[in-house]
Image (tube, rainbow, N blue to C red):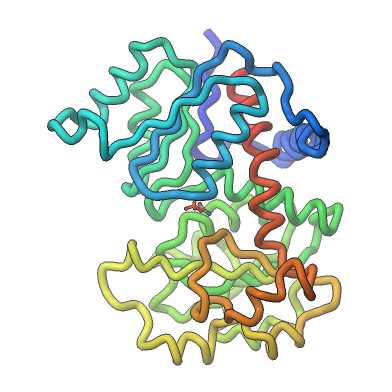
Amino acid sequence: MCEKKDILSLDKFNAGDISDLLVQTDSFAEILKRDVKKVPALRGKTIINLFFEPSTRTKVSFEIAAKRLSADLINFSSSSSSLKKGETEIDTLKTINAMKIDLVIIRHSDSGYINYFAEKMPVPVINAGDGKHEHPTQALLDLYTIFKKFTNFNGLKVGMVGDIQNSRVARSDITLFKKMGMDVTVVAPSMLLPENFEYFGVKTASCIDDIISDVDILYMLRMQFERQDKKFYPSVAEYNRFLSLNSQRLGLMKKDSIVMHPGPVNRGIEISDEVMEMQDITDSRICINDQVTNGVAVRMAVLYYALS
Ligand code: CP
């Protein structure tokens, strides 16, 4: 029997597999430029969006991706489900599976819990973000955004700034960026770094000014207040002093460099209001909306991979 095509992390994909996914993404991105943005690739397939934690980008993006491929997508709302009557999450999943669905997309606030769900499910499971653990489709859309700007990855310098400690995006991105030959430096004070940080094998700096004029990609991470059980940073003023992107710092970046952020942005913390307003108007280096746009084509490629 074939192994079911879960996407829980990108560990099992080598650089060649990732490149194949990017080529597939490119062909779907072309379809999204047409007047009729729909193909019959997954007609007859039923997909469930199961989000146990809030989301705008990932949830809507998967829904659009599924519909562009002609699949039927059902959004499951945990707040109006029988979970409220005491049904367990795993029984909820088994109940949904009994309705003969083809694929489940899950977001959950507990790190690693989706792997447990995937073991119990006979259909492919896609991780749409689990706690502080992994966010594989965010990493793929980030990689595709970089690919569209630079056309290759080898030797590109990435500065990843902020709350590494609580970030699933940082874990998935660092692993993927290194796999594709990029050079990653993490900018964070020790209280925003995880304990086993050496595992990632990247360089570290403590102030954004140490890397800003040297990097090709400045990746700003969101302060994950919802995952912080204690205060990890003394004050916003202190954060702004060492870790935030403002227009003055943007002026120090290379002309062909780019700024990324997974969203949602805490304006005035990771990125100033002024820099956010420059996006799409005066500074095409700020790629946050490009990331969101690219997310649809990437997720089409991921759904197609898992169901084909
Ligand atoms: N980047 C990201 O996962 O955003 P959402 O939480 O809005 O899905």
